[in-house]
Length: 491
Ligand SMILES: [Zn+2]
Image (tube, rainbow, N blue to C red; front, side):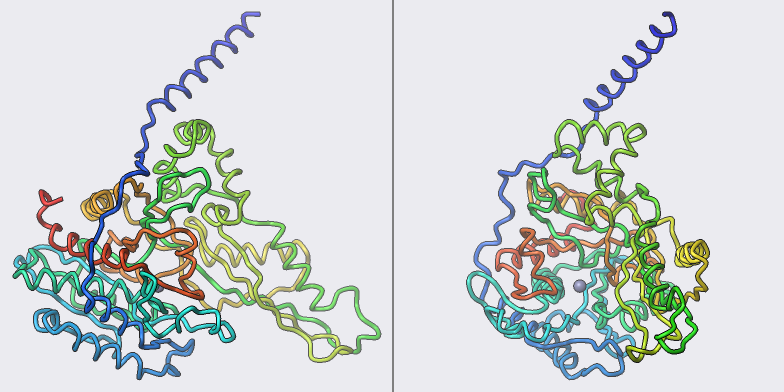
């Protein structure tokens, strides 16, 4: 009896502690009714410059050496012609031929510089989809309150917005306190190894480190998560790693009329099925936990209670997140069998079968540990597996979701997009930004536009376009970012 009483009192205490934690938990809340910054009428020539920037089909070939650089040359010449003031003050250094590094010298050389970066290569238009475009993808058409074409969302608009912002300030005679670098890669969509990677090396060799780096990244998006009413401004603080594993299984060969129990193809299929059936365990990493804390206030009592008492409810949260393939990718290393190759004729036993597994690495797993995991699965099935690693990058360093640069970003988001909740997030894909951890610990990814989920999905897709209002907001955001960086009272 006494034991029962003690157990009940302990349970009551625990429930009380959980409730108190929940009520004390005060995540930021947005006010959905607040209007975002209205840029007003945008001068025609500003739109024309973006429109012209879009007109260059600067598409990087998968094999870099096969790239047609004429549109890249055209884009660089266009920048010089369209922005003479910027080019008369900022000094351009080309790195590895086509990566553009502009330095706008500040007053105080003792302060670490800030880098604004983006890329000017774009993805190609998938053949057969051209007719689906309302306006041709390299027209830069200005119509229906938008600018249309490849690069409007990903991401030439961020480059021209940076430079419009700089020129606006230069016309006012503004000189930044510290150096600002404007860095534009030419091969982000194919990995960034000829652009951002070389630029990071260029800075490292010269001993130049940065106070902060701001690259393209998450937008302020409405309707991205069910149950979250306010739009979220997603600030990328880290990126998952990625690797392509080529798994090879040898077979005996011979005539298919007298086959063994398992051919190389059969074994490859068994291995793929086993890999899919045995995902790596889920894990709550720092960026995802911080994101949950930022958005929990929008998500009703139960979620708030679970996040406020994470120590108790972590298994439940992981279970919920792993139930959807979108949020599952936030909490575990994912495996996707994407390619397969085997066999030469219907009646010939294949001597080998190869499958390609595309892996996205969560922090805590590594290229090597996943390789060992695949070998362990094959061993269990008694399959003679050889593992080749075609390309690989480990998960990136994690930038702090606080500190001067992060706080300036969130303050500016509050100013330009009132009612939007800023949240750190883990980038599932890859951007140029990861290359800059070599020279900076505070690397962020954010694109200051307020878009719907559907609009966001036109990036890399048909009818990619940006609203004129959003383009105006981008220019305003970067103007305020540069002018306010060393003048906190202006925020
Ligand atoms: Zn991009």
